[in-house]
Image (tube, helix red, strand yellow):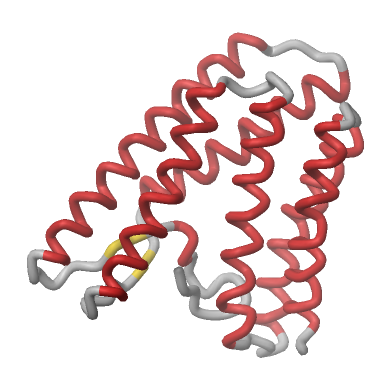
Length: 197
């Protein structure tokens, strides 16, 4: 077990803690937990590259931890009324769409390769920014409603665009064309190693 893997596992453990803090209306602590998780994400990737500690386990764990934290954040903040329900549903549905496409491809013995896509990276950045902004407002009693409102629509738009892009790519792949389904959950090797779905 490498140090980057320990850091990634700690980030996974932080997911239920984060949810509990949001549900318990401890937004300030939740804000710092989310921030620490983001720093740990950068740290495990740096350590893995710098000291050549990439591992196959890390290549699976890291994207799972990232996705689990984002989904948990969206769902818990949605239940707390801090993020619109439609955006939570769209974000979660998009991820299930991608996971479902990969599973169906494997079941049909026509596995699909998962690689990064620009719109997916932009969507992830928008999601992280929105979560941080929403938590910051609730935790420190500041108000940037117009910025938040604009970011909600930007995130929603990117979510729908990326979902459509993946669906089209997957349909081409299943039709026999040599294409790759692309998603940020298979982020490049700037983390613990080559990513998998």
